[in-house]
Image 1 (cartoon, rainbow, N blue to C red):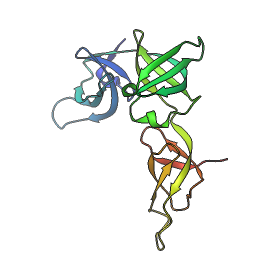
Image 2 (cartoon, rainbow, N blue to C red):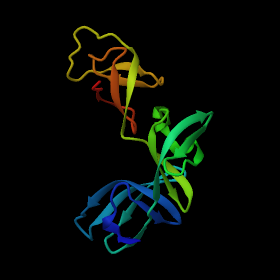
Image 3 (cartoon, helix red, strand yellow):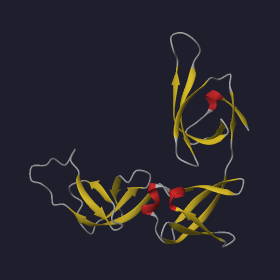
Image 4 (cartoon, rainbow, N blue to C red):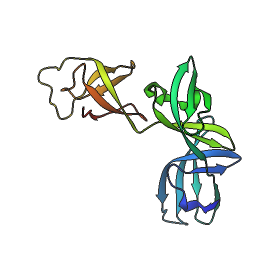
Length: 188
């Protein structure tokens, strides 16, 4: 589907220079001289390389539609992760590179979205947040103000994150899967 260069939005998949790219960040630029353009940070969906590109409204860009299906995470075996299609119950094993950093937040039974292009899986999208238990948290340092200071803590999956001073070991917290940041204390 052809779209104008200035119609690209973050998250769109476009075909450019013979490869598939995900628009990560966009910025409208209006220089003093010349026409306005869209500065787009693109990330190759197969190998993760990044590129910045300028698109003018007069340019046509091929927007790609990906097939999205919901799968349930079953288990991991080394660097291979096995998922089951929620409708057909077919199982699929994918390498860790396809999932990327968020793979550490996969939990048994978690529903994820697998995007594929022409039948080939190209990305795994986890839920925006997961609830996990803190297994280790540093004690609060006296005199630390609660407004701006965070302390290190370790989640049940071994990932280290920064949490507010009032969070202690045993507390369940909500964590952002895209960057591993603390969101809030879980409502039990």
